[in-house]
Length: 161
Image 1 (cartoon, rainbow, N blue to C red):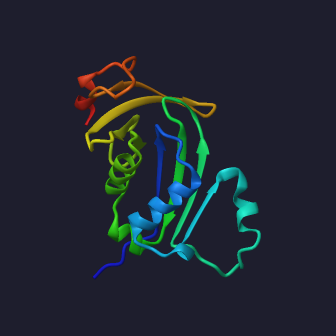
Image 2: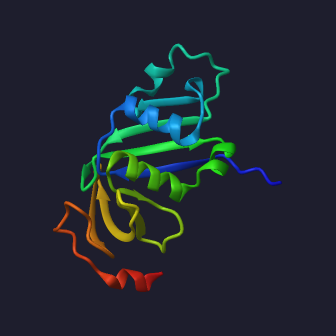
Image 3: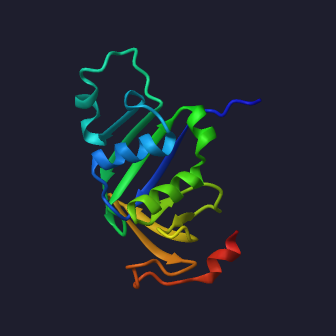
């Protein structure tokens, strides 16, 4: 049996999730104990770790930040291999979107310049996006994004696969 390598799940969420809700989601999603998860705003990591002994290792280490544009929050979750074996990247995005009634953008195996967006109902679409200065703006998707009628649908994105 091969062991899954430690990895990270990075993404953007249309909803800004409070740290307590994010922590509870990670505990449930990965089926881990309280002491195995760390959650903090990216600007407060040092403060949050100040009283944690140096030898402590977290199975899931999550940081988040507020962003602008079509998204409200960026997140990064570093996980041990055993957790990656339980919940893959796509499944994590699907669970996050459904749990928080949000749409989630993440990258996996898309062609360069495209991203995957998972809607709260589990619909998966491709998206093209502009980013800069903490703003992430969708400029084309392969299906409508709820609440974002200004984002054009472009089936031509599918041809890039």
